Image 1 (tube, rainbow, N blue to C red):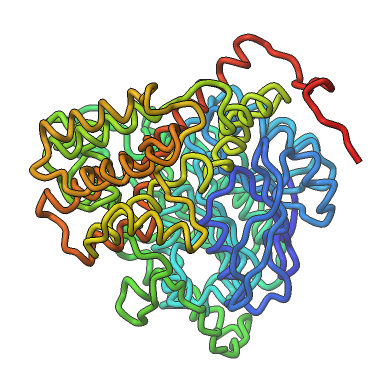
Image 2 (cartoon, helix red, strand yellow):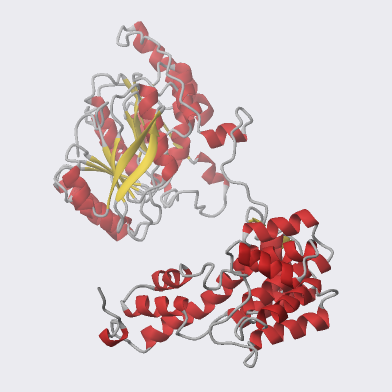
Length: 608
């Protein structure tokens, strides 16, 4: 066990199993104390590497993240404290790995419930190699104005109130982390404050004992008196009794063992800590307090009198000239996190994203204000979900059914069309699903599947202006624009597209009005007089029918309809639908284990 000071203003630690709040609290404490360098040198997160952004005062810093303890110790040889936030399942193994690193001198184990047999092995190894274990089941420790472990001493407000940003003259050791926070406050009220405080943890076998730290404190010149807070259960306090009897401690020790109320219970009582359970008269709080008093410690009559005992002891040291006045300093203001400042109403900040279609902040996600449970309970289909997320309203059932029909009819059109071909070639090149899907989607445009919006736009404009099919087509011809939604490479007057016929049949049976579709059919009649393959294709059918859906439902204003067409909603239907088929082609090629595709030479015209 170390015989002197464990920490200093230059101490750095490695933090195992990253937790944002305790690390940030350590860095805020560093800034409060005026440290020049952060106390956290590196973070160890098994299996991950990189950097973690945190704040050191006003400055944002990047702390290295390492995947293994060995790598972290090699990268930060001056970091000699290992703060272990692993769960009780892995705390022992990771702590032993840290103790075996030559650079690590102190290991703090935060987890409760570490198996006692594992703890005994850690203790034996640490003592044999002159290293210190604090914990398990500890909040850690602090050297005022220099270094603190994790959440020790609680919030910044508590640290400032306890004057822990600068060193005092009192060494404090306790089993309880929670009571340590209370005692730091008590000590600050009646003395010049804490110099070093340690919570050894509440387990039956602590890595280091009360007497270990009292003996250390005795060797630190800046510490003029010690305060000990023990508890019933175990016999740890008796090692301190022996040290006092043997004259190993020559500074005043104020001590109290809590748990005197245990005698009021008729049966044995287990208090909060695993070790806080009286196993006989010698382990009772009364017996320990008496033994400490007999050995020379200053023991009050009750916990309530502990503060007065500390005050009287400190004042006596002042009278004897053993304590010099400490110059008070004003700690710097810790910058407040934006989220906390906003929550408290101190500042306001603009948002970066606006969302009107969904909200995931409540107990369950909502689509356009409709809770997920309602969507399921009311039997909503894919079309209903699209109506909520795309159009921000619940459309009539015939509208959502039409959307679903469009998706089904446009899901795929065989392996030869450009989108499917691209996806197949990409999948056969060994690329992943997303890459294969995107390669096919990128072919969607004016020439392949992306003409729905244009068809709707031009048909609407012509119909609303009461242009005859002749005037419309000839005007487009003069402008050099092909009529979107008209024409097919395979389908013709005598070989109609079955998908178009199905869409028209559904609309005529269910839509209140099919004005735009009938106009598109009239345009088709005129274009067929010019060429046999200038039929209304599926893009034109969907585009014109969607205009009828929007206008006939009575749920959209003229401005909203124009905006929907302009933004590209209707092409979104084709993109959504065709994604289903492209994903299918990807899986098909991978399932068939098809090799890399190479286009045959005989299908290429090589020319100068």
